[in-house]
Image 1 (cartoon, helix red, strand yellow):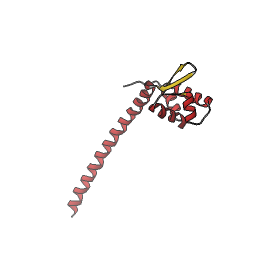
Image 2 (cartoon, one colour):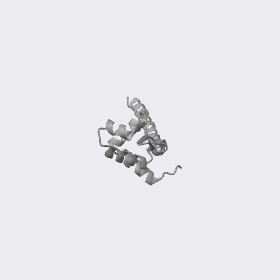
Image 3 (cartoon, helix red, strand yellow):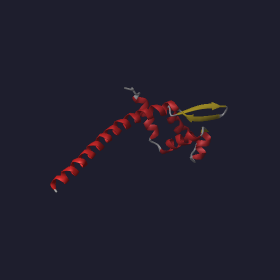
Image 4 (cartoon, one colour):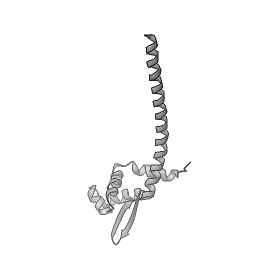
Length: 120
């Protein structure tokens, strides 16, 4: 079974809980961007965007690199992969449960149909 770092997952889900930060991830999924470009796109102050990017970076969802006076941002694939793996584990669990429920419902329908024929 895969072991997950709980503190890292907590930080990732906390970062993902904010609509602006999710928007930043969507934007960076299209293309890398500077913090200034992101602040302009989201119509917020440079300081506000730096805080959002800092939260994303601490969670490992964004990587920043300073080039001259510009701080460029890109997706932190490793952080996203860990969150996706955690979600996938529960997706598989619920998918198996729903498949089992489908089989039960189909069996009940089949029995109901047979019982309906016997009553006639």
